[in-house]
Length: 169
Image (cartoon, rainbow, N blue to C red):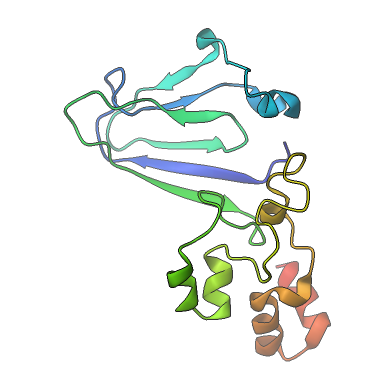
């Protein structure tokens, strides 16, 4: 998987107990073959899973292409974590496939883009979801349908040459 995003988790709760809702990672999994992701019968060996039992106040940085999940929270404590994703501005959010249509109907085109809505009614999982299930999230194919591009050009007042400067900042 290409290096597209990192996440930072700021842990507000004590997750030092086993099964307290801790983050689990499979180190090195970002180098595995994509076929393993598509194989619904594939199971990770539990010995490969790293459980991150952390104290409150911990900041954890990891590459989101590393396979990860959250362990069940079987403790009597509430799990509180703030996650921040850092990525190229052209990536769409991937925590969901689509926002609530009622929310999107109330938004400007720029807000719809920031919320991850496609500019068209294309399949949000891409033209070939079996092979590239997140292509629409990672790649903007039609720059004419990017509201932030038009807004940036208006701000710069320089058309495409101004956008080249914005893209290289």
